[in-house]
Image (cartoon, rainbow, N blue to C red; front, side, top):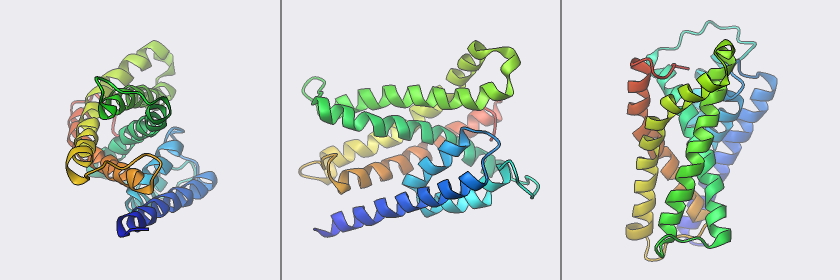
Length: 220
């Protein structure tokens, strides 16, 4: 096992352990917004200890049984809004990878383009679903159609911004960093995906900040 594979395995184990710790705590302290019970563990997978720190610092303030007043600042609220967006994108991207691998799909002979198309489509779908379940429970009187429209409006820009960072890193991995790109069956590939998710989070943060300030997206 080469050094990169060892690093990749360690990063994946740390991410998995971070998710598990968050899941155990969420079972005992569910979030007021149900979809965040899914969001936090997903972020634990790619953000590892950072997700743990932010969960206990900010996420716990939004638990149903929270004993401390919610005194989060704007930065924390935008971070959580970005986390929510990133979780939906991450789930869609992760589901898309085995679909392309199993089907052997390619677009104009390129597997990378197939990954882009499938992952973007699924990330958008899951992103809208995640947004819907953030909006609808608080606005049920306005109906589901209103919630769907609001979800599309709130998520489109942030999703595109997320995929810019993620797809840019995937292109570097595919064309620059490796003479032969890693395969989805190996630890290195998923380590590269963890990095891609982090970069996607970073590129989507400014978009989420703008959306929150404009009132298009509610801060969480």
